[in-house]
Image 1 (cartoon, rainbow, N blue to C red):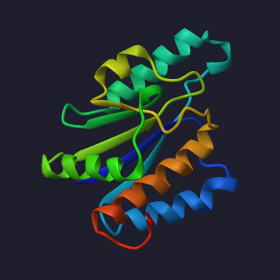
Image 2: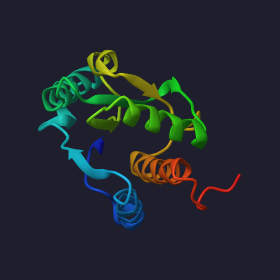
Image 3: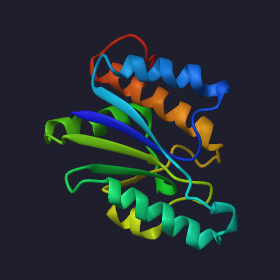
Length: 157
């Protein structure tokens, strides 16, 4: 199974770049993994919130294939602890999912069309995080889940 992290916005900021790269490299020991930074549409500053989300959503839907398993990170999604995330990822691997796409939305969240396409809506927390930190938390939690699946020592419980 391949894991892809998609995030709408700018490239990783220096204050999180090293951590994201480190956890991504670690995940690579378990699954093929890559990041795709979805660029903000041109003239985004001139668009309404609704138009911007719609334009971003159209780009996302164009990039997805019918077989991609989309996990939309959304504040009203379901929460999971680390063990449940590990079980979730293992279940997708057992189902022979080819590509697991974790999607971090833009500044105003995800368009309704993307949320409807999502196979699962996941909330990292009830807290609100800047997108850069959400990327780092996402990478770390997926790495943690990988170590739980393999019964390795990174996760202490």
